[in-house]
Amino acid sequence: QIQLVESGGGSVQTGGSLRLSCRRSGRPYSSYIMGWFRRAPGKEREFVAAVRWGTGGTTYADSVKGRFAISRDRSESAAYLQMNNLKPEDTAVYYCTGGTSWPPQDTWGQGTQVTVSS
Image (cartoon, rainbow, N blue to C red; front, side, top):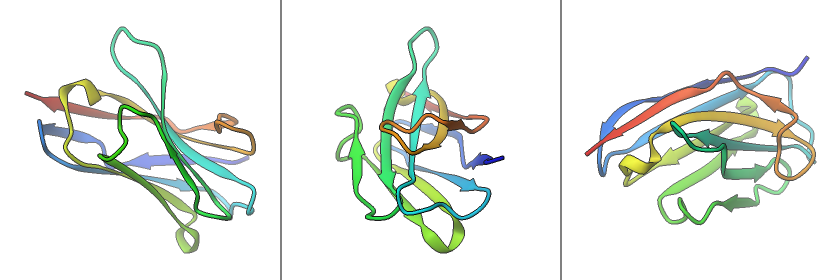
């Protein structure tokens, strides 16, 4: 069974940076997609970013374009989300996801809390 394990959440002030990591059990195949979703208090779940394992192609939500960067490391079977210039509205539980369809939602990690204070 595929497992995704996140790490790297925490608390920062506005303008700060955090890097989230997500390690997948087993080695993904080229058609696999890994991504990140988030759920803020009182709001619906929101797509953040995704990366195609084979090509490295990326897609971002408009709300994070230019501030967040998703990447993957084939040797580590891991995906990363570099978050810069964080804003209070980025406060949420961030979930790593994986799958073969778009957006990837077949497998979910346990979630990691990101809190941005003003």
